Image (cartoon, rainbow, N blue to C red; front, side, top):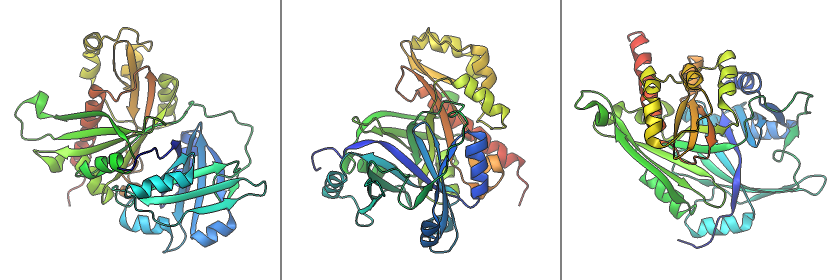
Length: 386
């Protein structure tokens, strides 16, 4: 492996392809209280044959595109997949160095680097590489005093509204699902130069004994120690491998891809209270989880949770950690379930508050897995036969 760092500074943005741009606009602006900060200009819209809008909260930037023709990137993606993330962008300190290191490690560069300058002399440079995540590309961006979101985008004038009401700060991590994750994990290590951060493996038979149903997963989190960028990668486990929610995601997504992203917040209880008031649906957590919580927290050595157990149970927020460092997290329902539209896709968001714990929480990880499976079984039960 070629020595040296790619020089990732952090996440720059992520790019969705969607069939219904207005639905996304309502979700980001009215529900999540993101601000629309840019739109594709007339020239870029005509050239790219897709309309794009950019939403921001804290350091999070999401670009949402819908096709206006049959040959654009969004159209090509949506012919193969439902709505989903088609590219993820990272800021780098030196684009030339990033390109040199990545090519030396075997990265497949999709096109020569591009460069643009604005009227003030600011510079934007970028290139994309292929990934093991199906049709998801990774983009590397070097910005030098470049005012716009990206070349060809027009800024949307800011209103007088305050900053994001929920305090969304940054992307905490990105999670992908594949039927086999070793090629992806090896690629993160050998091409991106990342290191292993965390791993877990379990099956529902571990706690339920012999049973005719259930499934499991294996997950490995890779990270870039310099920037803190983290990627969790999941694969299903036998037996009943096809019953796993990991397998179902790959089936529903028509291939591997990004399952969810986590947004960090400073205070999760008021955030979830307000999001529920706005009609946001979350994956349910069973009552036994909270009945067992006092004993479980004692076993983990967590004595300083400030949030009340009654609030956590009422809002179905998960808790994990160790040695008086803890984390609180919750997961939105997948888009297809929210909109009752399979073309909306199996992607969802996670919201997380960290109080010293930087891990992923075995207990919470398992609770998420089993919660998704309960929701999937319920949807099968209530679906009409046919």
